[in-house]
Image 1 (spheres, helix red, strand yellow):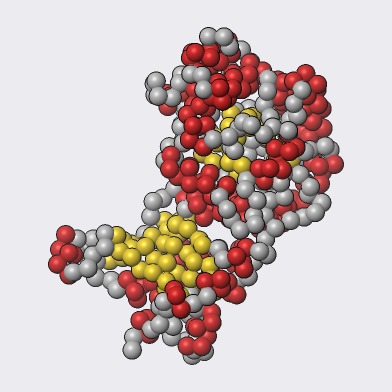
Image 2 (cartoon, one colour):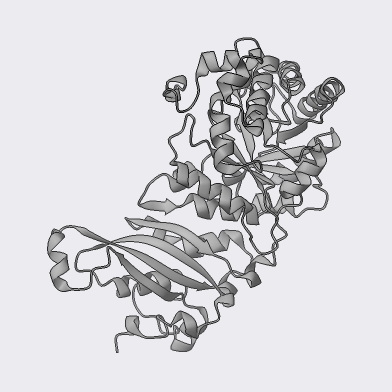
Length: 443
């Protein structure tokens, strides 16, 4: 019997204990006459026990315990008869959804090894993309996940009935702590709930150290609180070499930071998990997705945003930033919505986390987004605050007014008649559905 057809490598799903497997779903392109069952089994072997040819110690018993298992091979469209293939040119490709189960015992809770197993050598194959990973409860229970999540952050801020408003300090980098603190105060006093460093400033810079940045920004947060009667979180970006991460986190916390931020994919998911599971790191963690586009942007290669977002939540982020579907990026709306669902859906006992919509939030697209995703999200605005014609405080007020209008069910233009900051925002950047707001963005 052809080993690639054996039920050792191709068991019925009903014949295995799915609690022992992580199941990866792939989109795979194959040559017209390539055998998809052999291709799937080859992938399962390559990423677990074997190689391109038989090796002497790779027994059937070893494969039964440790080899990847092919749980599904589905062609799209679902060709059945040989005559169906006439529509495909001889040099054309056929596309399959493959479902391959990887024994959890192969990597336990080792995230780097998990990634190397599920998307290691095969990531170099053409037309190979990991679309999803199904995690069994036995695997997930070894992770602590986020400390705070949506409920914990709302409890800190005392805000329960609306989306949160975030601001990213702009310019992104190159400013002194004094300049940053001034911008921080102006945004906070206008009604921003939490302010984050940009992903492009992190750790100790010669022109802006963690301790001075945190000290001055938190002093600004307390001053703003006395005026607006609301707390302000500050997520200091501690991204750095892994050997310096814990020190950076503790410097920020000792200086008064009530949250921290990490460039999650650039620093690594294991680094994010290390911080999240450390009892000394007792503040919420925001994970920024910069660099993830290299993994998900191709429709035929890499890994999907669903995989990235599941792992980010699993490894302990309380907030994950997502490209805005109605902003300066071109991410499809349903992809962004899936990201929100991945953050808030039931994931065994892992807490739900906030999705922060970043990259082009303006007053004119806030009601649209709230209609899509409700209140348990964060509207992240950088330039709409710091590039506002009348200054950051007015810019923050305009965004809060847009949230208030949506909560009250009042059209933006109607609400703007009695809220001058909102009117300025609409006049400058427009309203989704009335005009093409893409004209606002340079990229």
